[in-house]
Length: 296
Image (cartoon, rainbow, N blue to C red; front, side):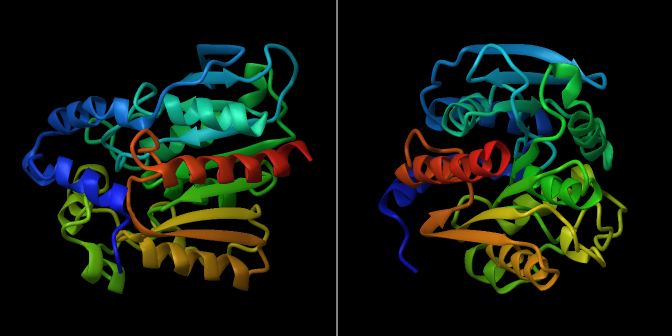
């Protein structure tokens, strides 16, 4: 394994940050907000506005001002504890501009104030309610990165009839922290650590069985009929192996899957398109896949 040079440069810049598991949730949220400039320059769209869907706060990004566009429901990463509509604004704008679909960013409730399964319940409610936003309920996809990717996988399984495509970027698929070889290889020194994942789960799902399929998509008994999937992974990521395992689970159930793994990349590269070129490439890849699935 050789780290991508831009990923290595980012790790050097981030080396002075305190470990996440020494911080309060509010302090961790502040660090993520401070990183917004690295997420890329926001592109202009025809319309961006805040709204609600089934009572859940959302932000709707439209590349065209009118019409019942297909909807990509966006579930941000941040371990169910960090992140908000502003941290992932540039990501949502890129997905909307490059897919030709509307993006519905879900401002789901965060832990520890709202523990499991609050974030998932809000996200599922928003998927069910895209018609309230003037979008086409027959053409819905779900997108998520990290913790959001795990929730997107659950929703694509639970709402089989409602979701046409799922795009999962380094998703959390197994809540048994440290159970894979990729944790052993990359659980320290590659930005997101084994300790970080334990910190996230301690805040979101204390006392929850890690085999609960609403928390660990890999634990689901049956994924037959789930939406076709696009999966993006980073090689140098403790979550890499569980992403591969979930791809295999989908394939064994007859689900069409396309996986793209980025050599030398680290867990947050997709979000860091302002400083890591592979993040920009991965966004374009995911947007093309979603646009083809929902507009074709």
